[in-house]
View 1 (cartoon, rainbow, N blue to C red):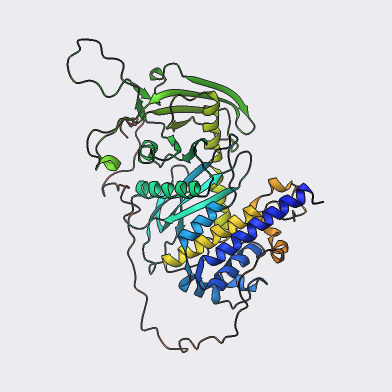
View 2: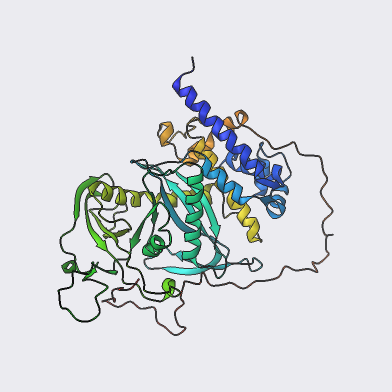
Length: 488
């Protein structure tokens, strides 16, 4: 009789083997080299330092130049691979709903003057209020978040922002495609709770909620602390002359006198942040204007109401003084359970940062010095597929911990610790890549012969069409009393 644990392991191993076969079918050119390159990333000892060094792994049976050649001349059916990523099991929140997070991370290429389609990427420095614009390739990534204390996510999509792209429009199309694939895969059915989309303050939450209103999705974004929203318009007294008001009284985040009594109040204690006070105000909306995202809107601008949630904690793990967090939820009439789910889901949004760190520092996402952005896209999808295989291997691999590491159960292993045991599991999985054929390297350019066809050099573009640049002679100074942001 097969035990429940063995049956679960057999099911996880079968799902992983099916996913690996589908991943191989998505590679329509240089399939064997690309597939073994992904396996070498999973089985390499330590962080990935270069693509050529991956050929030293036993799972990579080809020459050291095959990796770069496969990235340069290979082909990946991205749409089919996106469908495969949404066909596997996905994590869910405590109430069973899917929680998605979207954010932009950058592959910086400051000195790569021969790389086309580079744009200026916003990066943070080590000091307070230190930031700079560095040329690179920005990627918008969508992941599914897990509940509880975990650094795991489920990457579902990645889109590189090309020069001139509108970040808000690209994000809306990206989320629409992800939700359509999740619905087609059966992860969401009519009657299920709406999918929750969590984003940081760089995204326009009311705009996303308006554009995605026809989808079963709820938007939760963080807002800046200088925002000013409006309450609903009170009933107009009889006999009042003039045009009716569109916006009610102001609700200024920085002025407690305008808040009034909250509709929901929650007082709880968290492990990392200590006592936390959560207050929510219902039916608040921003005052929109015909500019930036709404410049091309025809007719009267909509009134997009939502719930504002204020989260105040006592301490931070870093020891810094905590500041209140303001959230805007596209739903109205929320009860206490829904408010608690919202702010807890926003705290889980930071797990996407752990995924970016795993991709960059361990799997070597930004390590290769690739010239073509198309090759960078292929390498990105290879690493997303490799990370997905690690997630499907969590219940199958043994914990090969270091002597100074504490033992952990299988569900609490980090992606880096799961990766250590993937090499022992790989012989039990499907490996559709064929045996390499014997070949001989080409002669290349003769020694001492100059290159008569130098690579063209490309200019750096601005980040996106939504970003604005300061005037050349403007001073980057901050006033002691900044002006509140009253329009969306």
